Amino acid sequence: MPLPQEFWKELPERTDEQLYDMLANSGDYVSEALEAVREELRKRNLPPERAAQLEATIQQKHAGEQQKADESLSWILRIVMFLLSATMCIGALGLALLPSYYESKGYTKKARQCWTWFGWGLGIWLTLAVVCKP
Image 1 (cartoon, rainbow, N blue to C red):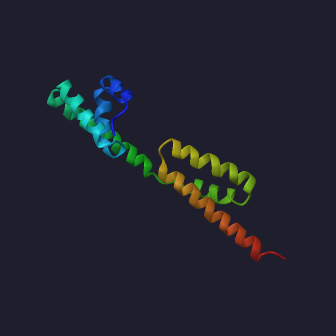
Image 2 (cartoon, helix red, strand yellow):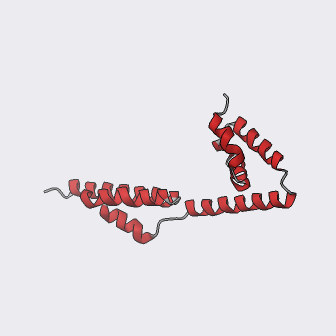
């Protein structure tokens, strides 16, 4: 499958760091695009020190992103999500806003934990409503 013209037009305009980032995220690109990126980097004939610096920068960036993604939700927010599930009106607002906020900022684990604690709370509150029904 040929790459779109827009890709070829934008490729020379990308920074060295953007090109190295594309290579670091190789799973996001087709092999033809990655080969085009490698060829563009060869054309630029970067000094080895610059290439090593770029690779280190990209690895550090990805390590920071991964650390952020793995960060856990605080116990206070777990309890808040649990309690919000007791009232669907307020809970729906918390369910929609907080996990979406965390997801947009790269905190995937926190977003997933918001959904989990809301689900646990909802399940327990519904069970209590059924059990305690007069």
